Amino acid sequence: AMIRVELPFHLRNLAHVEREVTVDVKGPVTLRSVLDALEDSYPVLRGTIRDHGTQKRRPFLRFYACEDDLSNEPPDTPLPDDVVSGKEPFSIIGAIAGG
Image (cartoon, rainbow, N blue to C red; front, side, top):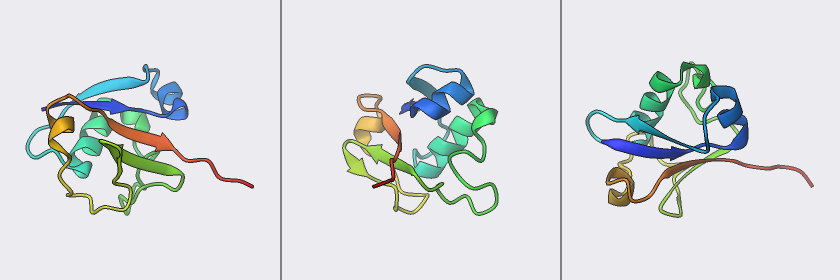
C-alpha cells in the first residue's frame, strides 16, 4: 500500500523533503510497518522518530490518523482504512512544551 505521511518541520528539513511523503508498505498497514517503511526510505530519520533500541516513540512526537491520536497505541495497531486507501495521511506531529 502507498501511504501518505505528513512530517513536522524539523524532520522535513533533516530528510530534505516536502511536508508530505509517500512510502510503500508491504503487508498489514500498522504503526510499525509505516514507520519501518519511512525509515527505510529516509535512513537519516532512523532514531529521530523512535529510539534505536527500544523502538519507543520519541518524546515530543505524536502520531495521528483520521484525527485520532495513536501516539500511545501498540506498534502493531492497524491504521484506519482511509489511511490505507490514501484518502487521509498518517501524520507525525512535533509537540510543543513550555509554559
